[in-house]
Structure formats: structure tokens, C-alpha cells
Amino acid sequence: MMQRIIGLGLLASLTWPAAAQEARCPEPACAAVAGGRTEGWAAQSRAEVIARNGMVTSSQPLATQAGLAILRRGGNAVDAAVATAAVLGVVEPFSTGIASDLFMLVWDAKSKKLHALAAAGPAPTGATPQRFAELGYGKDPKNWTLGSGMPPAGILTVTVPGAVWGWDAALKRFGSMGFADVLADAEFYARDGFPVSPRIADDWTPLPRSSPLKACCTDHDPDTLAVWTPGGKGPAVGEMFRNPGLARAFALLRKEGPDAFYRGDIARAILAKSAALGGTMTAADLAGYKGEWVDLVHTRYRGHDVYELPPPTQSWGALEMLNILEACVPVWSPGQDLAALGPANPRFWHYLVEAKKLAYADLAAWNGDPKFVTVPVERLTSKAYAASLCSRVDPASAAVTKPGPADRSGDTVVLATADAAGNVVAMVNSISSVWGSGLTVKDYGLILHNRGVQFSLDPASPNIIAPGKRPYHTLAAGFVLKDGAPLLSLLLMGGDMQAQGHGQVLVNMLDLDANVQMATDMARFRHGQVSDQLTLEPALDALVGADLKAMGHRLGTPSSGAMGGYQAIRIEKDKDGKPVYRAGSDHRKDGQAAGW
Image (cartoon, rainbow, N blue to C red; front, side):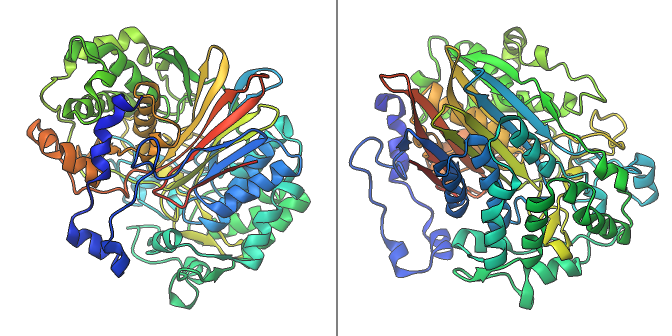
């Protein structure tokens, strides 16, 4: 294994440029060099967490511990997932919350089947291209993919939130507990407060501008300022932050269930906020919301069965990316595969980026709500189709997409859980952009998401906005089986980073034999399909950036902040056939994997 990734050992000795490092970390201690592990890959940030009775991994320790507490009280993986997600909505409110969307994969140990839940809300009544045109919004000729012409925030981007329905649906089908149990810790942290970590404090501000209805976005929502920056500023590192309104919302959910959100007091507060700002969401939009259990998209890669979410998510783009690499690398570099090339070779990265470009071109051309448009996902994720694309890549030169404005980023939480019975969950929960729509329902301390920003106002787009239609979703969740048994629960958040991130970490594990923690500690890239800008992490840029630039890649400023956040659990069996879990969590965030 180490021979395959030895090139990445070079990355351990490469650091940020001195000026950039001093700006990020001015303390005298920051002049030190990093130590290394005494076994395995020296640059690995931490060991895999290994446990057999249960496992939770998320981007925040308090949330991970809430999920672990549920497991130790006898709850299962689904119970733990909902508890973890709920606490994440308290401690990372700029990323997720109760007015968000979610997707969840559940490996049910009893039936030995993989299930997928889509709890993504549609555009509300009145969300028509005609209304947007009347308000001054239309197709952006410089943006040929998702979001063309849409305002970045505000009430026009708010779609029906699906998360609370999804939490309830998952618990009722596969859980062993209800809202009264699994939302208790979230209510506690909202009411009594939590100490803000350095990463969360850094992510907290600035808050987005979201108003007015026309010519958005020039003004802050006063309720958002009042709830999230009391006293005129965000919380400092170590400061306790409390959200009594959100605590009231959780108390209602624990007592009344999802009806509190879709038909009760929380629904009425959401509708009042929407109406006051000129939104068109109706009581029927909320009360009538239902998500669905869906079929996953599948491919075989290096002897493994890889599953990703179907449209309208971009998740399936990871499968097309993997198929292209499998079919085309031997064509582009005869006699070699990715492992033989190795991650110190610039062509290794060139091939990954070019495969990503091809997959994302198909996402832009085809992806949308399958209830409204036909998405030929079986053809686009087929081996034959991947092979037909090999000639579109020059092994020595970068292809050019269609340069335009900067790509939209996103903010999301991802988590994975597993229990002693062998049930495993992969879950993604999101309010879309950082701070979502920028609009807060003050009485219940919740941010409204802005998932509608990923519609298009281009009449030719499969993603044109319409009432009752779900937008293109950047959210992704993946799962890997080996010989019919669960092997890997995999997630990587971060807007359009998600599918390309899945592709990269799966290559790390399935081609390069990286363990589940190494797979995220290894440097990543992010390519913007609209901007055609390639961002590398600083050490990777130092290693291969000049070579990739010489190939024609448009390199941006090196950054780790664009690389999203990963969580994964690997499932193995002991000699008695009982599950043993290995988990990894992204060091770029406050991540923690914990088991018992």
C-alpha cells in the first residue's frame, strides 16, 4: 500500500508560503514544523477510529457525541444519525438546520438491502419564470449551468424544507426511537448554549445580505442580525452561544412531531415571514410536503459496487467520473493505471480533472428533477458511454470549459453512523449556501434555506424553475458494497465539490489502498465548471501546480478552504462475522469520529 502513495509523503514536508501562514496563524508557535506519525503515512492527521459496537462521525464533536450517546442508550444507526444532524443544526447553523433538505442512505442489516431517502423540497406555489421576469430576473448569458439568473439569497430562493419530514420518515421506517428522544440534545444545546470553536467562529460571519425582493441583495434581514449577531458581532472563540427560539422549536417537535413544522406554530411563523417579504409559499405547500424513497444509481469500479444518489442530485456524477477513469486511463497512458502513475505524477491529477470536466458537463446538460425532465442517467453512467468519451481528452493538455462567472459555493453537513447490529447510515443535511437565504424566522431561531438558488432562469435548461419542482441538488451521498456486503459509507460536502470529491476519495481508497482516514488527509483539488478554475491545496500546488499550469489548466490561488468536509465509515467483519467499524473524519473541519 505505501508504495502506491509514497509520492504523497512529499506533501508532508511542504507548507504554506510564509506570508500566508503568518496571516492565518500569527502566534509564535505557528513557526513550528509539524510532527509525524510513528507508523504508516507520516502526514496522516490522526488514526482511524476502530470500534465494534457503534460508530458516529461528523464535522463537530458535540454532534458526534450526541449520536454516540443515542447508540449507547440502545438506539440504532438511524436514531443516532437524526440526533447528530439535529445538534449540527445548532452548532453549525450556517450550514444546516430544521428548515433544510436532506438525503439519507440506510443499509438495513435485517433485509441486507440498501435504501435511499430523498427529502428535498420543491419550489413553492407562484415560483414561475414569469414572476421572476416581472421582478427583473432572467437568464444570465454568462452562466450556462445551475443558478443562471437566480438571485443568490432572499425569499425568492426559499423552497419547501424537507429535513423534518425526512427525519421522521427515516425514524418511522428504520429507527427505534422518536423525536422526543433523538432531539433532546439539540434542544439542550440550543437552550443552554455551546462553546464556539475556532473553526465555527471563523465560519460565522459575514452574514449574507438578502433583501429586498427586487435587486436582491442589498440589505441584511433584521431578524438574522438579531438572532445570529446579538450585540452587532458573531460569537468569539470559546463564547457560549444560545438560541432560545430554536430551543422552543425543538421542544415543539419533540412534543408534536413533524406536524409542528408543517402544519403548526412553526409553519405559521415560516409563512408569516415569507408573506412579509413577498414570498409565495402557501400553507398547502408546507402541509402537503412529502419526500420519497428512491432507487440509487450504481456502477462497478475495481471489483466494487458503488452507489450514489439519483437525480436531481449531482451525486451520480461521481459514477460517471469513475467510469471514465477506468475506461480511459489505459488509453491515455497505455500500460498504466492510476496506481501505477501515482499521486506525485501530474498526469494522475490531469486525468482526474479531465474526467471531472466530462462528468460535470453532462450534469449541466441533463440533471434536473426527473418528475419534470428526462435524465438518461443509466446511459450516462454506463461503461460504454464512458469509453466513448476517451477521445475527448488530450493526455497532455487541459480541455477548456466555458469560462464565465465564479461558481457558487455551498455549505452542508455530512455524517455517517453504524450500530452493533450492522445497520449503517450516510446522511447529508443542508441549507445550501452559507447562512442559506439569509432570512431568519426569529421566534424559532431558524434560518430558511436557499436551495432554489440552484434553479435556472434559462428556458432551455432542464433545471428551469417551476412550482412543485425540485432544483438541481449539489448534495451527494455514497455507499460501496463488496461481494454484496456493506464496505463503505461515504460523504464529502461542499457545493459542487461533492461529486468530484467523492470521485477523488474513492480513487484514494479503491485505487491507492488508502485507509479511511488517509483518504481525506490526502490533498484534493476543486475544479469550477463555469469558471474553469482549478484550485489545489497548497502542498499539492507546490508539488504539481507548475506542471498542470503548463498543460493549460487555469490555476487559482492555492487553498484548503474550498475542499469541503469528508466523513466515512468502513465496515469489516471479525472472525465471528460481527461488524467492526473503521471511521475517518476530515481534519479541515472540527471533525470527530467516535465509537464504542
